[in-house]
Image 1 (spheres, rainbow over the protein chains, first blue to last red):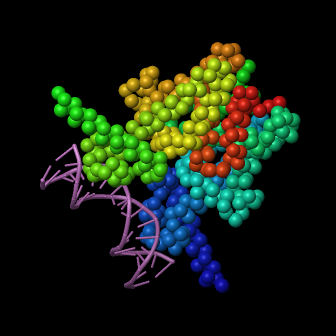
Image 2 (image 1 turned 90 degrees about the horizontal axis):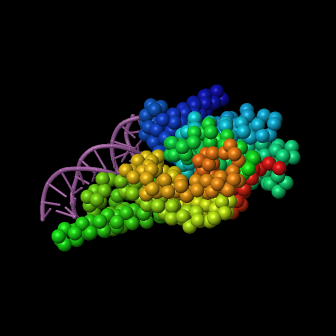
Image 3 (image 1 turned 180 degrees about the horizontal axis):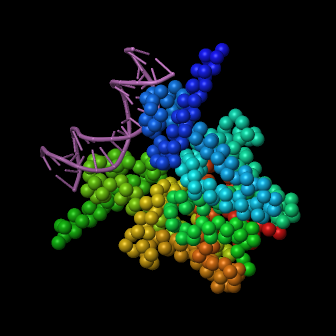
Length: 206
Length: 206
DNA sequence: GTCTATAGGCTGATAGAC
DNA sequence: GTCTATCAGCCTATAGAC
C-alpha cells in the first residue's frame, strides 16, 4: 500500500506546513493578525484548501496553542532538574518569565487571548494524563514546592498546590503586564522577578 | 450668550451619551464588540454623527479607559485610609481583585487590551500630576508600603517602590488569569489572594 | 485535491444632500 | 448637525469547475 501511504504523508506534510505558516504569522502579526487568507498566501495555496485540513481558524489556533504549551514545557524542563529546591524555584521563575517575554506572541496565544483556547488543552482526550502539556507544566512548577516541603523548609500549614498557584499567578502577572503595558511597572524584570521570588519565599517584613 | 451656551451644553451632553453607550457595550460585548455602528444605534443617531464628537473609535476607547481608571481609584480610595499598614495592604489587595473581577470588562480595557490605550493615560498633559488617575492609583498602593516602612516593619534593604510593583504585578496576575482562563488556577480567589498577600509579607518558608 | 469565484457578513470612515 | 448612501477594506466559509 505504498501509494496510499504516500498520499497520507503528503496530507500530513501540508497540514504541518499550514501550522508552520500560521505560527510564523502569529509571531509577526500577533494572534489578531492570523487570517486564513494570509496562511494560504504564505504556503501558496488557495484559502479554500485550508478547509480540507482544518475545520477552520479556531482549530488552527487550538493546535498552535497546544504546541506553544509544549514549548513552554520544553523551556521549563531543563531547570526543573536543579536539585536544591530554592534554587530550582528561582530558576523556574527566571525561565518562565524569559519564555514569556521572548516568545511573546506564543505566550499571548496561550494565556492571554481566549479562554476557550487554553481550556481546549484541558478538554482534550488525554487531558490530565501524563502527556497533557498543561499537566506537565503544572507538575514542573509544583515539583519545586513539593521539594521544598520534602526538605522540611515549608511552613507547616502551607499547601504546596496553593503556593504553586500563587507562584504561577504572580509570574503571569509580571509577564502579561510587561507584554501589554511596556514600561508600566517601572521596575525592570531583572529586578522585579528576583524581588518577587524573594518576597514570596522570605517575605517582605523585617 | 445663552444660545451658544445651550449649544455647547447640548454638544457636551451628546458626547457624554456616546461615552455612556460605549461603556454599556463594552460591559456586555467586551471591548472587541465595541463598534461605531453599535454605539450609533444605541443612542439613535447615525454612525457619521459620532465623528463630529470623536476623532474615531480609538478616541472613544481612550476616554473609556481613563474613566475606568478613575473607577479603579474610587474603588481603592476607601480602603487606603486603613491606618494599620498590614491591614491596609490586605484590604487593598482584596479591593483590587474584587474590582478586577466584578468590573471585568473595564479591567480588561484598562490593563489587558492595548498598550497604546493604557499608556495614553500617562501621555496626557496632566500625566504625572496629582490629577492623573495612573499616578493616583499607584500612590494609593505605594502608600501601603511606605506606611509599612515608616512603621519600621520593612526589611532595611527593601525598596517600597519595587515592592509596590511586585505587589501590583502579582495582583494583576491573579485577576488577568482568572478573567482569561476561568478555573485555571484551581485555587479560588478567596484562598489565593490571602495566600498571596501572606506569602509576600511573611514568606513561604518555615 | 485544488482551484476560482463568490456569498454574506462585518468593519471604520467619508461625501454630499438637507 | 444630522442624515443617507457608500467607499474600500477586511474576514470566514462554501459552491462548483477542473
